Amino acid sequence: MSSLERNLVRKEFNRLTPRPLGPLSRSSGPRCKRDFKPISYKSYFDEHVDIKIPESEDTFRVYVSGFQANPSDSLLLVLLHGGGYSGLTWSLFSKCVQELCVCRIASIDLRGHGGTVTADESDMSSQTLAHDVGQVVKALLDQTGHHDELPPIVIVGHSMGGALAVHCTVLLQEILPTIVGMIVIDVVEGTALEALQSMQSLLRGRPKSFATLEKAIEWCLRSGQTKNLEAAKVSMPGQLKNLITSKLGADEVDDSESDQQASDDKPAPRRLFVSDDQILEEAETNEEEKAEPVSSSRLDPPQSDISNSSVKDNEYSWRIDLSKTEPYWKGWFQGLSDLFLSSPVQGKLLLLAGIDSLDRQLTIGQMQGKFQMQVLPQVGHAVHEDSPEKVADAVATFLVRNRFTVAKNMF
Image (tube, rainbow, N blue to C red; front, side, top):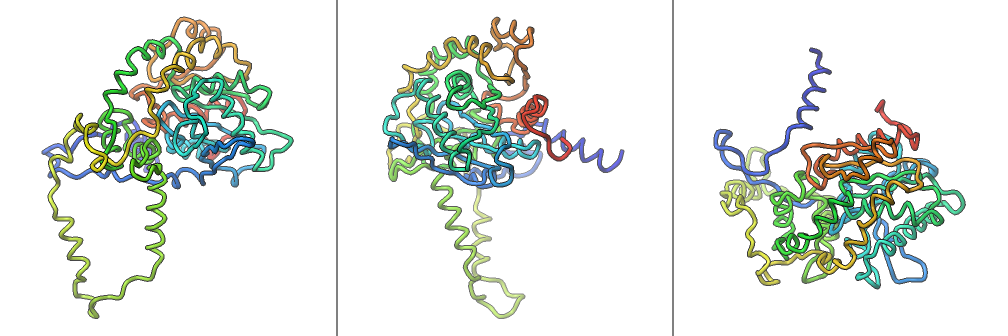
């Protein structure tokens, strides 16, 4: 077997083998402290822009990528997150898909989520959210010089965002007539409506606050919200706000990184000793930190009574109170299968975490060839976070096959 073949086999094995969430086993040596430090979005997107909607006080945050590297008429992927998430949930996927095909990315923080600020955050109806998406995309394209001709647009949505993607393809035909496709990830009408019956109970079971962003990331991983540590570290801060400063957790991460970068750019401190074989005092401090034992509580699952702690001890809470959006839940999903099948867009892809969630209507439509479907096993509900490479591969294949764009790097 050649070295190239060995590398391909090793790469595929690493992708398919799940990583353990807990500590190392006893046979593998001493227990290690997992790193739950949050990371910035800047490794995945070029920048974020705040889009101000004309004739309103609303400002929507959009994470963008590929606008400078690709032509102005190249494909635009509009990414819509699920309820409670933010545009940062698409971070790893965005980086992966742009390595496979030519496209530009616009990942939107929806009303009431992330860094978006609107005058009325209580209106979460599908019509309002779809109208928001249309205005944001139009304003974003106007800023990049698309005053007359719009590029081809494919809307990609997960969970609530998947339902919203379907509504957008129907409601935005006049505002965005160049929507050519949609990709819906892990949401089906029947299954979603059944899940709503236990949604309030599920929300009550979550911690209401966290002491630090690191604790929130640890909970995200151990609770199964995502199985991917890297995804949790970049996505979770966008779902939380500081109870003291009301600042978005993701903004704090960016500020901290900027401060660190500024510190790194400063001249190096003067050496404390002249001889190169002498040990610096600063190094002694670092060795003491390394020798500090790992607390056993660090490895324990998050405690349920964290929500009852004081604000002083728990600095971060959820950016949006999802329980208050209950009046709109059924409106997101009722009639979704009909809308999906009758949508006028050219290409449709349904990505699911399991085949058992497919209802009768969609089963018939899939057999009639009205849409493409792919099932990704061994992933949770946050499919695009758990396995961003596989989702990017499926999406890029769909886009190239339908000639919405072209492949890159011999994909």
